[in-house]
Length: 142
Image (cartoon, rainbow, N blue to C red):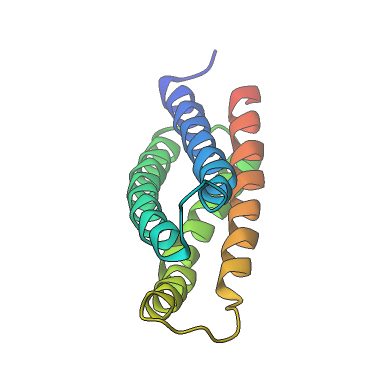
């Protein structure tokens, strides 16, 4: 029988996964292809959306950590979810500030070479998605 803490871990994990997939891999790319959405408008919307996403992600990650401390579903799930949390922290501390700096420059009219920070963000989002998927599946199986 699965404990309530393990069920909460799985539920929070799949909510987090769904949000990342919907926003990072669906909303963000589609926004820039919408009619009338200029780069400054897209960046302005994106900054607000990702700030909100990251805040919700932090709450979900904290809930997962608490649930894992109460009753961890197993080593595999715990490691995978720890990877997701560490990736989120890396995004917030290392990648997002660079993206914000770049978007500030673009919004101020800078048109220099493209930044690699966006690629780092997509890469870390991809790692986070895999970690959440594996962690959620292993939590349910545990």
